[in-house]
Amino acid sequence: MTVMNTGSGKNRKVSVDVIEKMAEDVVGDMGMELVGVELKVLRGKPHLIVYIDKPGGVFIEDCERVSRALEEIMDIEDPIPSSYVLEVSSPGIERILSKREDFARFAGEEVKIKTFQKITGRRNFTGVLLGCEDELVTIRTEEAENVTIPLGHIAKANLSGK
Image 1 (cartoon, rainbow, N blue to C red):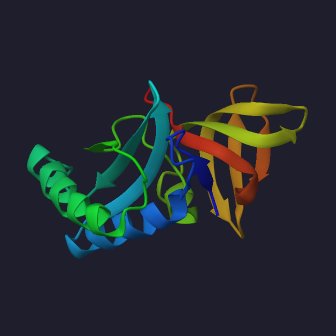
Image 2 (cartoon, rainbow, N blue to C red):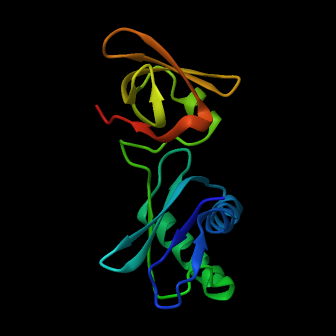
């Protein structure tokens, strides 16, 4: 479970996993895909970013629909103990990769991967995503070496946008 202290006066921790489940339900009910959820504290205020996608791309109307529906549920469930900023967005050209399916779907694309711990002496990798099999992501680095990274060791991954 990912937990974040919002820095609010209430000093309550927020479970990002709980928010992600709420967002997944809302987005799924609308026939879209939840790409990812980020919760950051900017200028002392929680900032929730929800990334969505759908075949044919995401339009501003899709973001507005998801935002309104998610706001309603967030107001009822109150997973963030203070006021917050909600942003709903398309994943963009530097799309976040978080699920095993993402790593399989975007095989052949340029990616950037950051790991929690060092693998082959480093934590940052850039190269061509070769795919994901048995919870192992393989990337062909810019140095022309194949590196296999356990999915659970990936702190952050996204398309490079090149």
